[in-house]
Length: 437
Image (tube, rainbow, N blue to C red; front, side, top):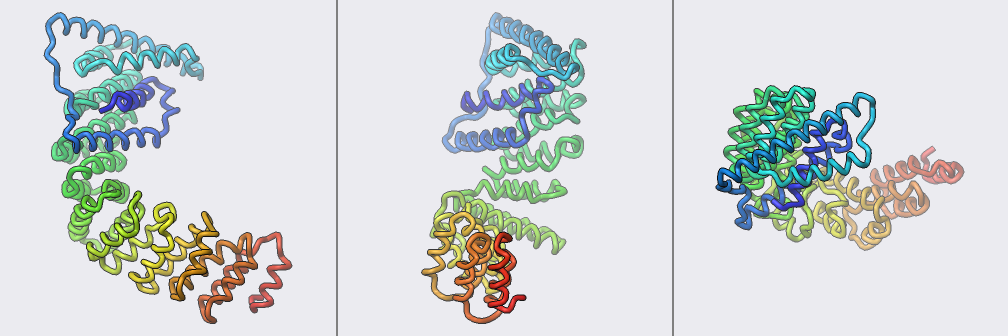
């Protein structure tokens, strides 16, 4: 793990450990750190770089020096926590000087090894000078530091300190970090630990924790990730499902493995409604995780994967302009060639509507050049609905390019409904012209 990433992880844990300052670190920031950690560790594994730091053999004198250093830092951390507690009691926060001390303290903590953090944990656990909450946070931060290089040891320490950590947000964070780290190097061990202990620590081993760990496992072992997904019986499995599928972004081979295991997982679901819902979520997630892949690469993967009509429709429903970009017009043409008329209607409307909101000139140019088809007619409806808010006359012109029938009638109604409120006269004239009064 890089020094900068170690520091960012430890910073998150130290902030959690210093009381009220934890409020400045929102959940999404911690999630981004964990996601980056997972990706970088996976890259290290793929390159043959060891992710577990070996234990160093130390002389007796070195051990004594390290213990002395750990005891001094533990005392300083306890004193710093007492200051933070005093500030919290009066509703204040650390001043600039205290913030600087915290930063310097962070640098020193990052240099400690696992044995030193274990000594700190023992000292803090025995201390009666600070509150239970402060002890809990400090212990969480030290276990989190150990988890960077020795996730299995960190989990053992978590169990030893579970009386303090099992109902705490910082405890949840450190347990998730340790489990995710263990999943990178030993997916089976992480899965077994979670299956064995999830019930005991239900207060913090929630769906968010499961999602992080399952995603880490999926990077190396999609089969095990889906097995765990089924075995844990999550209240809402969709977030974990999305995390698994996200690991296949820009990687057709990994996506193949995920698709195979997904179909096997779906076959185990006895409830038809659950199965259909999860299948739809999964194939929409495939579409949302195209990354930088071109339509040629993805469409080849789709053809090779032999998606059913239902799977294809769900995939199309997950397409968005943020994923399709410059290939949006080609994706609409793909829908026209691969989906039923009913199946493509909503995906085409949604995609063209979003495209037009983001770049109406590009979508208009594509429409002007596109051959006549039911997909184009649906696209005209969506385009007209989007531009009617600011160019209603242009939208009306597009509507009249449609052949007489239900699609043209619906388009005219949508234009009238979206007509700018600042032009009631124009709206009334449009309604009279097309019999919409």
